[in-house]
Structure formats: C-alpha cells, structure tokens
Length: 361
Ligand SMILES: *Cc1c(COP(=O)(O)O)cnc(C)c1O
Image (cartoon, rainbow, N blue to C red; front, side, top):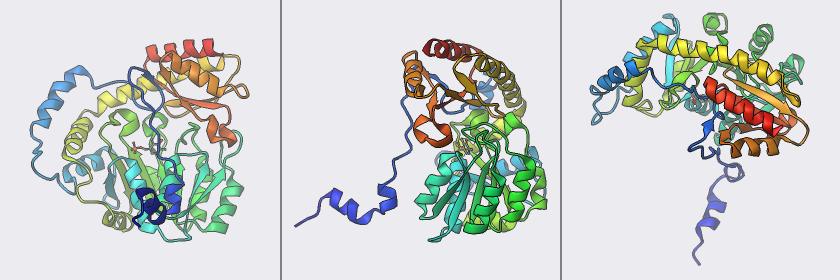
C-alpha cells in the first residue's frame, strides 16, 4: 500500500522541524504598520530618479558579482573596517545567523542567547539541529551576568548571540557585562547591532581586542528592509569559514546596486535616523504619561510596553480594529507577559497610535 504525503512527512521530516511553527508575518495591507521596526520614510524624491538611473546598469541576464566586491569596498569605507578584518554579506542578517550556525553545527552543541531576545537565534539553532539555551534577563531586561557566566561554564556554547540593543526589549546591555561574557566564552560571540543607527553604540572598533567576537549589522532597520542586506565583520579566520557555507550569488544584483547607491547617499539615511530618534523621545514621554502603561526605555526604533494584567490581547485587537498593527508579545510569556511592542513611525503614525492606545486603555 502506498503511503500518503502526511505519512511520508511524518517519517522523513525531522521531528524538531515538524514541531516548529513557521515564522508568521501578519497581513498588513492598508494598515499603519508599526510591528516590524521598519523605517517609515521612503527615499527622498530627489534621489529616486538617480537611483532608477543606477539600476539601468544592472545586467539582469548575468549572475551578480559573487563577492559583491564593489559594495564591500564601499562598506569597508563607510564602516571604517581596517585591513585586519573582513566583511561577509548575507541576504539579511538572518542569513548570516544561519551561515554561522551551519558552520558550527554538531549534535549536542549549544547556541546561547539571553531571553527574551531575537527569535531567529533559537529558530535557526533548531533548523541546524543544535540545542538552544536561553538565559533569562533580569526584570529590568538587563543581563543577569552571574547566570550568563554560569551557563557559559556549564554549556560551553559554540556561539552566543547578543543583540545590542536587544530586540524586543530595546535596551543596550551593559558594556562591562558584555566584555566579561566575551572573555569568558571560548566559542564565538556575535554582537548583533541591527539597531546601530538608533543607539550609536558599537563594538566594531573593538574587534581587535577579542579574537572570538564578530559584529553584525543590517540595512533593514535604517531604511532598506526590502533590499535584504546583512553585514558581518570579523577576523579573516572566522569570515573565511562562514563564507564557505554561503550559497553562491546570495546577494542579488538589484540589492548590490541599490545598496551601493544608498551608501553614496548615506546622509539622507542619517537624517532619517536622527528624526526617528527625536520622535522616539516624544513617544517615550507620551507613553510614560498614560495610566495603565509601563514603557521601557529604548535605544532602538521601537518601544516595549506593558499593560495591565490580561489586557494585552484585547488592546492589541482594539488597535488593529483602528488599522494600527503592533506586535503582541503576550503569548511569549515570561518577562513578556502583558507586553506589546511598537515601532517609532512618522509623527502622524505615532499620534494615531497614541490616540488609539489611549482609547483602548
Ligand atoms: C530585525 C533584526 C534582525 C534581522 O535583520 P535582517 O537583516 O532584516 O534579516 C537581526 N537581529 C535583530 C536583533 C533584529 O531585530
């Protein structure tokens, strides 16, 4: 008797994968989208024509430059990466996390991160058949340093991911704590600086101090989420190995050309980030003034806030009814119980959100 698809899946797809639920991206058409930390501004109109002009040179019938040398050269300059370090590009930093995990994966080996943090660290650990160990943050979302050091000692993680600032909590971890963690770890420590434009604190200038540290950036949160470009910087020894698991031509030609163009107009993006940082301060004060809301300080382009016990789902739905999409983290449990996350949008979007929230409360 022939087996059904379901029976074959049951037999052949790994149990860890069958047990996962896929990363859900909710439908947001027509909504004020404050759920995914995108930059709300498109390119200044005077740049649009120049950008389209630059796209004319892209030869879509050819494979892209496999090493994206032109783009890497520009990134080296704009990120001040010295000759002692190399750059690896990913189709978003998600792909870089995956490459790192693939390069170290071995049954029984551990990937570690504080908890709560960026969910892809844990998901990708499962994809590659590794074990994930989350170490709970303290109630103010700072690192529990003794617990981190004990977990490092116990599990000897192959990789530790530290989002700086952290997602979904928005805070920067203490610099001294991070240094102690990097020194205590034998494996690789990835400092994930996805929100660098909004925090302006970095470990990039300390790569030479730590042979087991690499720094990751992305263009996504600062205005180019649609391009999918992640950037990893570290010593050639690490980068060379990760590069071996990279699929050929992972950075498509439209991304290579567009990112190179964007870097030539860095100032426009810096101005947008500055505007978002200023609106962040206003939004913090507004959220702080609301009864029934506990907002946490943020160095990123979003806020985590806690509402009264057992009201998060209802408040999320009420916002959604008014066409405002935020992220409901209540079901994650733990420190995120009763918590929602909102991206800093345009002034108008922020006002609409604050109004709707006030009514929902
Ligand atoms: C959004 C985010 C990423 C993913 O960025 P992409 O480059 O879009 O894949 C990585 N790390 C953290 C902490 C993030 O919040």
